[in-house]
Length: 333
Image (cartoon, helix red, strand yellow):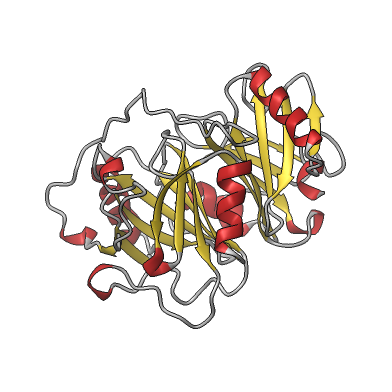
């Protein structure tokens, strides 16, 4: 896919630090919660029953994955009656949004102002207490959240003891003294011991697109850098990562939208033990052991590909897979 800016995309150039989380609409919230906690091994840090949502994290950030129950025609309201971005969407399982972490609220506000001055349309903006964010749709209707953390101690809000509403309106245009960076706690690392897998964090997503317009959005609006391209598949990186996003032709997978995402496992032997335990339980998965990485891909209850991987060397994209070989075949399943 050609990531050319010639597709008349508004120049916003957010340049996020990394992919922060994925937010999913799911067919059965409890079934998906069990998969992501007991199989995927990510700690449940928050339930928000008022909007039928669950959040999971292993400490790398306030949530790596958010799960929202599908429901048609029903509003999801947050604090003060705020109608959330997902209120008129989410009738079927799939992507709610990809979330891109900015360096700070100050940078986020500056980029929003720059983007709006260049014709950028913002669907929603929100105060999530732990973060402030703006939601922007790409040309194929995939939502992208650009957010900045708003507090250091996010576990004061995201913890199992709290189930009150989180989200309200955020008037970013009225911000006079935006917040600076919020340092992360380097010692905040959790492990769900009874789970099959033990990842550290989410690292990248695979998005299927029907047109080059999504690539143009990613570069011109998102400010991501294309680091590799091969036979219609493109890899993009944010500011602090190897690569965060693969965009693949929709014709090579069942359809457009989110195909799957990857979770990093820090220790090779840890992943090897998890793979053997999953085999003993008869769990269906695809395993690939290459010079670049050890990888195991499972399907979540709604059919998304969830990859657990450990890189054996430089975690970058010097070459890309093509349909039928390398990494991508496991996402096709």
